[in-house]
Image (spheres, rainbow, N blue to C red):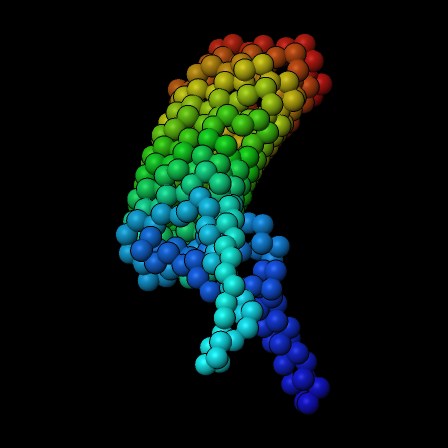
Length: 332
């Protein structure tokens, strides 16, 4: 029992020492500059004092504005005066704010908007999860990575733009039922994680695929009308676009390397013509239910020479099909 108690105390002491060290720079102690209550934010520097991350006060209401750079004020005791009062030497350390930190409360209805400046490269996992009152996210021009569940269940959020984003992790915008438009830029090899936009039932933006799309990434995004696949796109995961009932156009743009997962576009009935690119098409990728086989739907399919693999029932139950061109390279 004594050994266990000693071990726990040692861990707590180590954690305290690490925290204390993080508040010290070149012998100077942090005493001011890490809080900005008027704008709902506070800041933490990294251990090397090279970058800072932004955090939100739990009890803040209204619009949050993060700083692009934050200046920490530091001081150290250099001696004492005749009344034994400490004499300080002062210095400042300015750091770029490169990250929005994770938010562990996972519920906030009082923040209505947030401004993210250009130095911020990453929005951490759960940073704004269940911020149900947040209607706008602006700035964001430097954001390259959006963490898991970063905006999950932000049910009032309507429009966001991330022109530089390279990686969107799983469930990042899942359940954002009011989200109408999202600008994701045109960065090559962009990664969109599993269920990233699952249940975004109001989303109307054209979706550009430039890298990889994870499983069920756009599940039940009912109002999407177009998917634009670039030449750099690598893969579309299983069931990625199931439930996208208004999808009318899928453009392959000469892509020669795309791999389409099983049931990726299953049940998409408003597409009439497909000129399929890529290299392989998964099981039931463009199929539909047996009971719908005589309804209107896909009429023409043409495969580019790059397509080599068409798996089982990839285009099953299209009684509406009038034209089929298997191309020159299909193996099975």
